[in-house]
Length: 165
Image 1 (cartoon, rainbow, N blue to C red):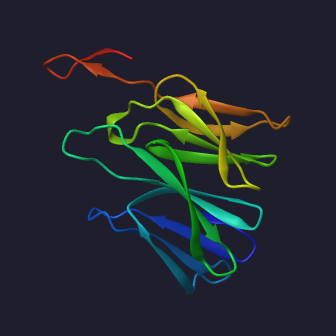
Image 2: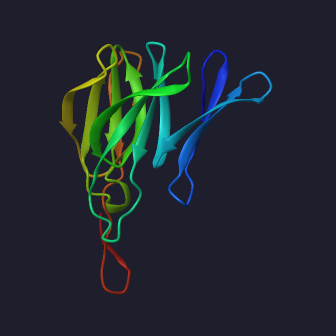
Image 3: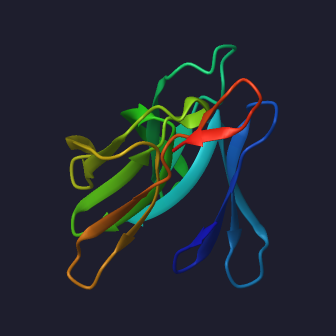
């Protein structure tokens, strides 16, 4: 969930793969709008009068890596106005300056190791940064630098014992 000046945006991921964002008034949590048509929404961030929702595809039968997207939401109409292709399993997003950073964790397969950098003026990916395995979280410091936490990938032996990270 994230809150801007007037509204709270609650990102809902359902087991059936019909995710949505429930928008309520921040002052009293009364329903305002529903933004639907998302398959596996994860996080939301705000920049330039827009909201950005990271969206995955959940898991396929083989837990294979699939590229996913970030949807652009017009905050005046509460509708999707764009789709930006990013890496697999986009999770946490953070804004620093005029850039939106998207941690691509790999989703169910945990096999991505990139951060997509989106220019919020053009809504285009301007850079893809390779980091360690499975980036999950980010923070911005006082200088505007973005720090990325990577969870790594755990390996198991045949008995489900952890053998390495």
